[in-house]
Image (cartoon, rainbow, N blue to C red; front, side):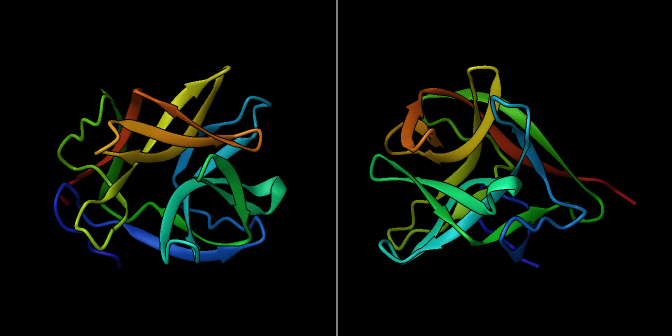
Length: 160
């Protein structure tokens, strides 16, 4: 179990590849064609870190936004629903991060990227919230795009 610190609660990332999705994967939304997208992250050697992104099962990759491009990576991690935890999407803007936000990656400088999503051309597209840049970066149609208005993935614990 991955236990992030800061604005987060316990979350579990499961390794996967080539479009495979575990049964308890967290749904992020859908692309403009209606295909279900999942919360994912992939290791990107150029930055030696995980980058949050979207898993598109029919493409067999997790797409991550970086350097103005949409980068497809076939080995990735999928955020899964742990017992007694409920995920929710909270509206935010301009780098705001509510309590309980899920960390997508930890940077060496101590400033983390968080999991978020944006409404784009009828779809709900997941991406990474960059607090210093006060926006969410997401990938679409081969490009890295940004939005100042987005939703943040947060989790709540349920008492048993």
